[in-house]
Length: 324
Ligand code: NAX
Image (cartoon, rainbow, N blue to C red):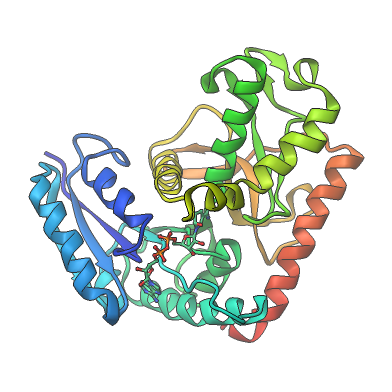
């Protein structure tokens, strides 16, 4: 048996975690031969609920679970963590402006960035799910000067997976037939789901779908999918968000042949200036990711990529004083 890895999950009593923890415990993230130690973080008011989740995980008798730590102290939760999934965040309350939301979360993610810096494995891989995910990841990273910014990522994989299914269903193919799907930018309604480089069963997507469907149906459907789920379900995406978080971490750790979307520190690629966490097409190999280079960007795409970049720059400006 392999040595166990330590997986920290924040917001352990929340609805995404109620799916995420059980699937990780079952081996869906790192495989059926990788034992895990779960290190779950909550706020003090939610510790009773978290202890209930721990009781349920114990009741599953998962063979891979070696130990479970439940705590309200980030320094304990992130101790020697190999993976950190930052799911817990402050939701928007009544009368809260966007700026208030950014600031409330900035306070949480600066504390957690410092705690990761001081306690986590030097190779920790961090995925931020809690919204506003890209900017929360930036804040955590800026507060962890001893870790590489490349260790901090945010989740656009749910948007990517949503786009895969929309296109597969439209063309009557399977999601596994779709290659080179790309989500650019922010995990928000300005994100740009781009089909210009996408193929379905080897054919360019643009040979199979109308431009009108692409611009007026596909793009807004993917951008607004979160709101559509809330309207239908009366609660935000949970199991699908957990599933995508697992996809993101699994591909990052174990590699992938194809192209996936990850929000990562911008490095100037495709004219996106440095200093934000921007979703790019990447390939993962040997535990690392590389941006897919050399794609031709037309004027339509350039405008959409710039709009989502501008939004991320505005988010950054709102929390600049907390960037450490
Ligand atoms: P819930 O409100 O069900 O759970 C959040 C949990 O986090 C709560 O139990 C809360 O007590 C805990 N929490 C709050 N502050 C904390 C802190 N400082 N430390 C530790 N725990 C803390 O939300 P849920 O539906 O699970 O969603 C979690 C986050 O994911 C939200 O911010 C949500 O907006 C975001 N999402 C991000 C997605 C993405 O694709 N990036 C998609 C799904 C989801 O909307």
